[in-house]
Length: 74
Image (cartoon, rainbow, N blue to C red; front, side, top):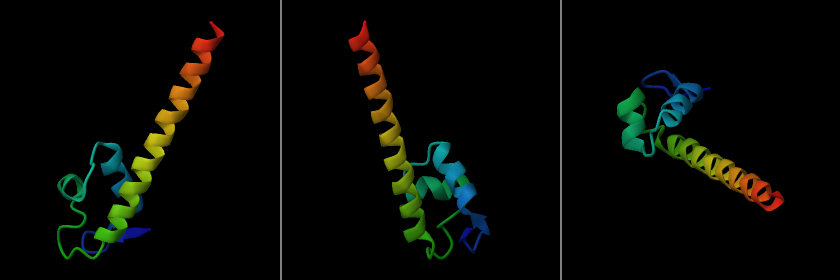
């Protein structure tokens, strides 16, 4: 789905910028150009960023639980 109409950027391209290390709107803009022309996509960019951060935190939590369970078995 198109997120930034000014730059014709999709949610996939935004996700790639976030996966590459973008952690705020300015960094997303520097990496792919989204949000720097009219700003109309900024609320959706923030939503995508929040989801990615939440997902990453969940992944870390799962990894920590697995490591703890493995350590307990030793």
